Length: 412
Image (cartoon, rainbow, N blue to C red; front, side, top):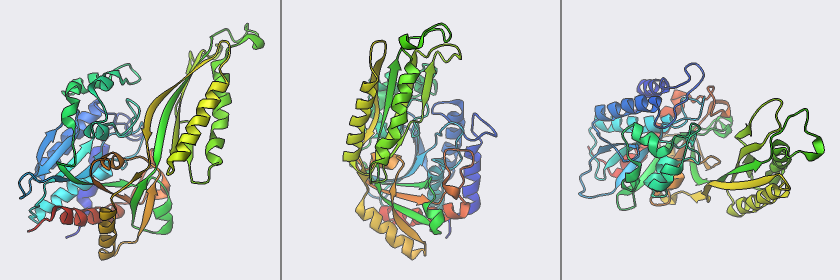
């Protein structure tokens, strides 16, 4: 039985309607009204397909189909349902819909798993509201404390703990969200590629064996405000001029590497942001990604040296670590199963390294993980133009379904 392409499309389009920016892409921040509406739909569909629904203490959603083996660890399939500002409809929801369709196929075929099947929809993978990224899965892995949730704040000064409470979740019970190898047999995630490789090669799926390491830091440069017309140039402590000196040199740190390392300054804030005021404060982020951990460490050291080099009388600098993840190698055993099933389904596939971070890399710290990519039209993502053909989603979901059946050892 094939995955139902119309059902897949309906789920993607419905979830895509829960956006704070209608007509201008998907903006669905964690614990927002759009989050609340999307989670209500996801929970409804989980129940529809015979899953027992629950939300953990921090708002990750689970739908569970019990297995026949008492106390056996679960096989989890899913992804995240938050978005970047003005993003697309497929980044994250494609993996959540994969889980829903797997559950629907289990129901239609009356499959009974030996190991429990769980569908998951996670929060705050993008880090768009509180920074850092993969927050939902990091809480599942026990990497985030209640105290840290109280310290994380969005652009309006609302902490993650406060935002959780607004939707009825409990940051103080974050430890209750913990999963381990004892209760988790495997995790499978389907995601859009967010790059052009599969489309350009005319291939159906990418089977990821490695996720690059990544780090994100926040640089703050403090100067002194002054009138743009009356403050002489020699005496200025211009925070923006100092920041530009650093930012201008950052791309070369990645370009001089020979391992496809990338570096991005993605967020820049200038204060007080007046046309006739010398900037007193500049805050920007630096995102570094590489499959080589030594490369990341070397570039981080160079960034620190560059930032330190602009400090002088009137100019002070600070660097805060937001995220650090070493390169992650996914399960060789699950990868082999995905390869075998791709061949059986007649899919064109390739092994891939993921240049983007995913919840899969966090799960890989405590269980076996498989990650499947499906093509992105034009390689475009994180914009309203993001698109994956539903036929490609259908093929990827069928691969995941076949693999999940084997991992749960399901029978009719």
